[in-house]
Image (cartoon, rainbow, N blue to C red; front, side, top):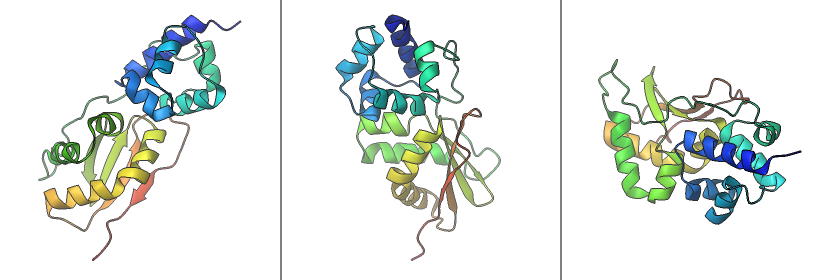
Length: 184
């Protein structure tokens, strides 16, 4: 028998582990924030399509979400914007990029997609790390051009690659997403 209250607590724990609000998770899965609140309070369960989306976001199978397997004390790597580039002359670049992007998009979009990212620069490639493959893919499809443009503005460089990767070593996806700036 499924324990709706336990499932709700697990969804809440996973959401907080990614440092997302109920509004942010509702935006990611396409439901109202009230629906997220009902799940977390044990009032109801998400439908199967939403469970699949939640699974991708939390890097959990639907079975793990429903049966609480692997959910307790789940720790998400990263979680805060890290100041990288100590090994290069580009100290603080990602922090500056995030500051500029924050001015250009809504706060909820920034908090959902970019707040928990970090980056490093190696061999003319910026590696952008997200908590999971779902978020990396979203950044690739929705924010590549904005990130490239902002990196170009801040660094003055145009000859670099951009790769989106997941920080989660347990990520079931093995791909990464790469884009290069357009040459003008």
